[in-house]
Every structure is written in structure tokens, then in C-alpha cells.
Length: 200
Image (tube, rainbow, N blue to C red; front, side, top):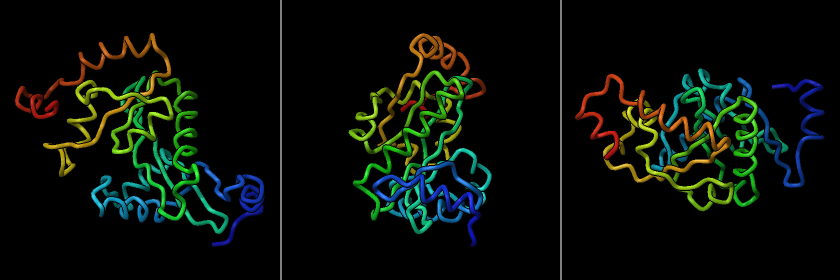
């Protein structure tokens, strides 16, 4: 696929010394995003995504692109509540790991979270030290029940989740108020048995 003059200029000027450009995803990136995610999903490290899901949520994604135009990293910011977002689908190709690509992806997503006015952002992850370096801290999964019972029901590990929940507070006062609001609305319409399963 040919690139426009604007894209070529961005590539020349936007890559840092690692040769990687981190930017908002475009429709043409969808197949590469799905391929990268599913590569790690096959290893049990994240949930798989079909191409339709990626197209439907392409505006949530940012990608890391090398100088050849190959997508070597991706991540997404999903809005979960009016003041809460989730960093998800974070993946970096083996060939690009150890070059700060994941950090740059998350930093761009956090910049977007601040622009949107979110009070806090969370992630479910196996990479605790990585997120700790970005200022996240470990919290109980049960404080995000709407995430658990709405999104994780399709996960094969939903009854024995081994991921760690981590949060980054962007606005202390609004986050404190948010905890009370999430608790009030989280289990609306969910039976007692479902609730017990969700927070197990």
C-alpha cells in the first residue's frame, strides 16, 4: 500500500533513535494488530481478538511501527466508566522488546486518558514490575467488578484468574469518590451467585 506524503514525512521525523514510531492506530493497521495479539494469545498471555473486534475498536488503539511500516507493538485504552479506563491488549513483538516500546505505548495511552479527563486507569496484567515503573500499584480485582463480570466472562481463566489488577490514580479526589460510585452500580442486575464468582 502506498503512503501519502504526510505519512512519509511523519515516518522520517517521528521515529526516535530506536527506529520506532508510536502513534494512533489507523484502519490499515487492524490485521497486523490482530495478528500480534493472537500470537501472544496462543501462548495464553492475553485474550484473542478477531479482526472484526479490532476494526470495531480501532479508535482505542495505538501502535508502534518500525521504519519498514511493520506494527511491532500495540495497546488500547477502553473506557469502562465515566471516570475509569483500562489499558488492554498491550503487546510488543519479540523483535522489538527491550527497547522501551511498551512504555511508550502506555505513556501515549495515559496522555489520552488525561486528555479525556479520566480519574484513574487500571490494567490486568502478568507484568507487574513493568507497570510499577510507570506508577501503577497493585489493588484487589474486586474493586473493578464491572470489568470482571462484563468483560471477563468470556475468558477461559475467569474462575482461576492469575492476572494482577493494577491502578494508576490520575485524580485522587475523584478516584476516592469513584470507588463509592462503582460499588453502588457494579453489581446491578447480577445475582448473588454471579457476584461471588466475579470476586472470587
